[in-house]
Image 1 (cartoon, rainbow, N blue to C red):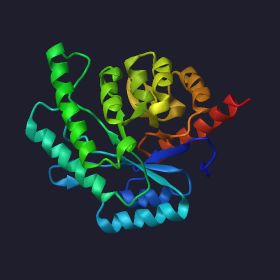
Image 2 (cartoon, helix red, strand yellow):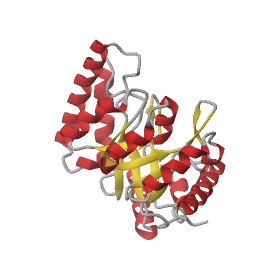
Image 3 (cartoon, rainbow, N blue to C red):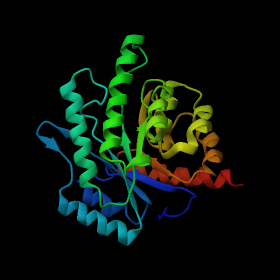
Image 4 (cartoon, rainbow, N blue to C red):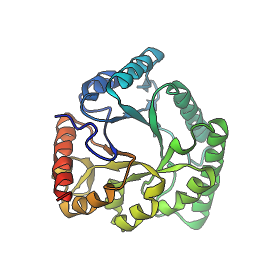
Length: 264
């Protein structure tokens, strides 16, 4: 089933739908969705960063099928780590990826400001703020053209903590709805507050405390029903962030059913 150009926003999936490398996944989904999230990693000897030939192929596919790419920076190293070496390694990785994907139609770069959780003391929070502020400044100084395409994703800490970086450096939000559901926050109020500065929304089901599940399996379907009207006036990307063929297509189908119901 084709889900392209059905909504006021671009509907997307991840680059892990079938058990294969990035390019076969892109080819497989190019006729089905508007955006594909490139989930990248670099860990020791293992890396799935595409080479230049692969990037050229993805560029051709994008032009032919009218798709965009959201580029998820690796999470193997933390931007807000205590150790300078780890922060510098992450910064170099981000630099390399932005340069590598510079010719692709990128909808957004997804940035985790790892290094904080809801149990940190005030001194630890301030340290995290200092190093993340320095990271964001260096990144935007190096790539001013990326600007609003750099999207800070909410994690386990209170998402208001990274709002100052978004404002100071003119970044954007990536609002992960599933993460908000996991934290049992007032997700509707938060989403309404930041949606004007949100380029990408991540959506996935939560089942017995486990996220990134099919939307069809999500245990609180009324949450999905509350989300649909908010999306009526949204024009960014909605990525169904699940990682199998079954979960992807059951989520797309279920999302379409909820969307049509919300329009009645």
